[in-house]
Length: 390
Image (cartoon, rainbow, N blue to C red; front, side):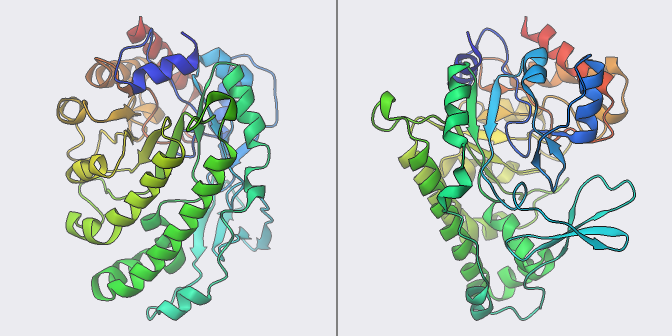
């Protein structure tokens, strides 16, 4: 099997020749540039200046030599957006400041800062109105220039035998709404002024649909026949879970967000029916998983096994027929950065044995590999994956 066939077999809930491995195909399955440089050095690969696929999170795009050395099966397509395009920083004293196309100001500490975080939102006032939302200068997410070069990349990846993953243009509707008005403000609006929160959600839905309409039209594959695509996986990332519970109640999700998110999945399914739909949410989302399945989610990521209710064997037992699990291969909160290489291997074996039986599993860490992860632990993770795949 080549990489693409391997991944597609797993996505079809069948066991491939080995467990497919993803590193860096999305902004939630990647590696911090500090850890990436150390990994290249540990692999004995030449010094290069890494390409950042996400400047805000400081994620490195894995180079071809790393992809081949580790046996990675996926390649990602990253549209031009506020995390990787037109980033101009300003001196803000102790911080570097960056104001993006949405009007969000990010900042990164000058001394040993590892990533940017949101400092100021466009609508911080606690009396946000529908008119305030309408007056914001929203970016054109459906612009063709955001896809510059992506079709050529997709064709190259497909020709080389890799599975192709297409990233969304911006974070999920719930998460991005927090970036527009602030998290506290959004939660209050959802509880007390749902019509205002709904106007914001509707605008973000409009922008999301515009992106996917353009992207999946552009990345179609005429040579493969009607309905085919150069993309194997399409993504959507929104965070509904905390370490122990959900950020909002399941009832609130079902009333205010579920119908809107469903429209995104329906458009993806219509324009790219052969591409699988990948959904990311950190934390405990177990009560929402039946809802995700109902609205068209086919792949769940990152399988946050340290969160309450996210025990991998139980997830596989209860939802393994309907969902592919992508991630959950090793704990990135406690094990990967601080454990011994042997402890990393043991964690990988436990998790993979619970999630991979019968197919329907793609290996990745639980979210991105952070800067404090030593390269020997990454190599131990890969070695353990190879051992359990035999």
